[in-house]
Image (cartoon, rainbow, N blue to C red):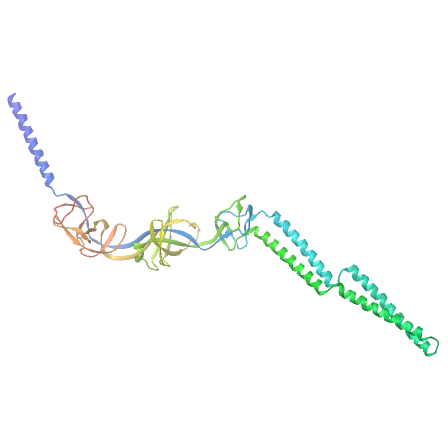
Length: 406
């Protein structure tokens, strides 16, 4: 029994010594650190941002008058021609106004025609008839006067009779002059001017009523696609209320919002790839046409607006869509490239931890083009060298490590 106890004691001591040795060895072993190799590669530097799609040419159609929408003749996505009716406003009262205005116009036109033809027909006929009778009386008085003058020369008539004949002739001629003056006075210049003014007023009233009726029909001002429709039957519109948006959807313009610190990387002609989350399998190509002219606030961001035009032959990239943009700012052929996570800041200087033997050495570097995950190294590294990646271990110059390669 004593021998067995001694054996157990010896075994426990041996296990404890081994455990202490293992713990001491583990605590003094170099930490594992992941490394990446410096290699030559093609690097395409891109700038990711977001934007919004809008038509290159479009018109926001607004109501010109007040009223209830009686009919909507199009749907979103319909193609329309210039002048096509998009919607109609209730027009019963306007039609009544137009009918009354046309009746007034017809009356004014008839009155002017009557005046231009000489006046009211009944009065004019009476005067003309009286003139005809007066002319016959003059002719008769002239014959009587000539006959009496011949008889007077033969002393077959008296001077009194001749004078009486002359008086009758003069009275007949005076009657003609009076009737002619009455006929002229029947239509004066003032009457004609007043009739013409009434006609112009009636024409203006009719034209205004016709315009008001036409305003009940809301028409497309251009050919294109109805990509936004804001009314339905029964809605009440006021002057200036938006009704629809009509535009041409091929091509479309994309307005990209680029954060202020990145604006210096942009230039006209840079290629851009547009994607839309609603159609993840599709992409559209374009290039920068206009760089930012100013910096503006967009929510909490300070951005510049970049414009480009892209073809949209299938018209599936819709105006108002929020899109993603990848701007290719630079392409490096056969450059020294490392993972972006390997670059660190130390004493306001960019650098990397390089593996020399089994120890780390700090190496300042100068970087160039970059992507989301990789960066070009212009100075400070050689091809095939190993650089430390991100780790939870506190790295320091001269630290002995166990490298782990991918």
